[in-house]
Figure 1 (cartoon, rainbow over the protein chains, first blue to last red):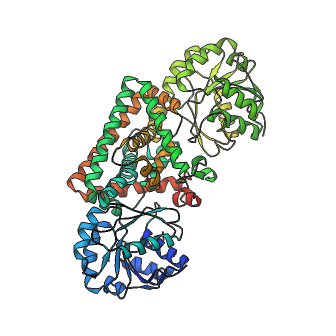
Figure 2 (figure 1 turned 45 degrees about the horizontal axis):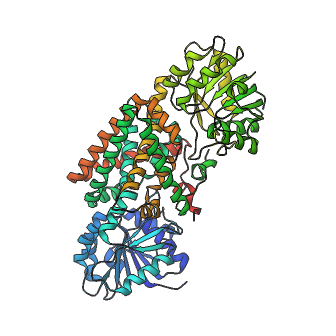
Figure 3 (figure 1 turned 30 degrees about the horizontal axis):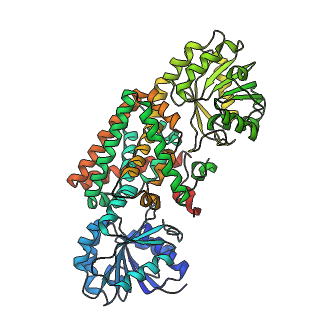
Length: 305
Length: 305
């Protein structure tokens, strides 16, 4: 492996940034890595576990002389962070963000990018239900996708270097337009999360079935929803507030289909239900064939006690 | 381990029945096991893989001299099967079913139970996304719940023997009333399945995002839904047609909550979203503490290529 950027600055030290650090270490991808987190507790934790070569007390200090700056804060904070660090960037440097939505981030970050600095929005599609500086691990991006959404007018070289960078972290890369990105993510990620949150909320709120029963008997299906419904609340609040249009569009489609199935149940239309449930099996098969999941029973949870 | 029933007859040879056979073998729980499946193909498969000591050509033949008869067909077929085998049961024998709903099964099966035969409805809450006689494995019930829903007027001894039997197969048992059972299962299992089917159906049906993209990027959350949306269509059709009231009630609550969240997104109410998403984390934690899931990142899928 060889160094892709001489100095990398991580702004925000959550699951994604901390995993990037360990993956950079594993691959020898960066000369040195500086880091900054807004909370003192996170900075202390980072120092204690050896996250980053240097943990700084301000974002301005962290970005000093950096060749790559990674905005890894919640999406809602990125515009303000960019504004704060803008005067401290060296010419020719590259700024990326790792947010889950792209149109809003671009409209909030791009205006603050100084002349001669490259902005390459990125979205590493990897995560777990854990968050914070201790949640990261070097293999998080292995065989996962990183979508790269070049800002209009960005030259070719910094984009190509981002491809090299993410591949060195273990990821596969794909270039995509911002509006299409936001729609794809609404379908494969944002709406599934919203639905999972809702289902868990309903179960928690029922009087006729106790929380204890829900927990005890969760392996019957409910459990699969709880992993994604345990994701970071701040991150997800920002996702929905910033990808509003695509979210509302797909949610409309979802509600429509759910109402059609509810009607089939109410009227006893077994044929419609059977046809619907058969169609969805094919998608599962394709996901297994594409190597995006394991077909072990229960995702290999079998050993769970 | 010791024999709990001298002869057991399995009617239907899908995931649950085949797992019961292997678990009975592992624990030495039955003297002999006979089996019957409606399709010739399933009977041939069962013979080829050594499923059951004897595979019969009719349910009447299979139940001959059996001390325990297990109805393991789709729920919708159980009444007719019970009617067909009723004249062939020996006095004092026990009939159980392993269906996912209980009130409808009881109302359809109980009228055909002959005098002197015990009926103990059961619901082993275990499953995978695979179905058919080759899907079974001995450890399916280990540390999983089996809900036992004694029919009115059933004497104590056959119920207690079912407790012993399921524990010998590896399961934990709990006694529950039929109507409460159906409500609990609507929450922890039936509605999650319906929602997962709907989400996968929506994704499959969109023009603006291709199936290939959905499959490629499924690890971002969508994938967690596809496992349960790949479950057996016939079984699930019957579940919804036979647990209609509880399904429609919980679905109503779900839609109400989803609309409230949609409104919060539309009006930009970040506080409400954040509060909602925070509440659901606690449930996830309780499920991990109760040993009903693994907290490994990605359910331990990390090694998936």
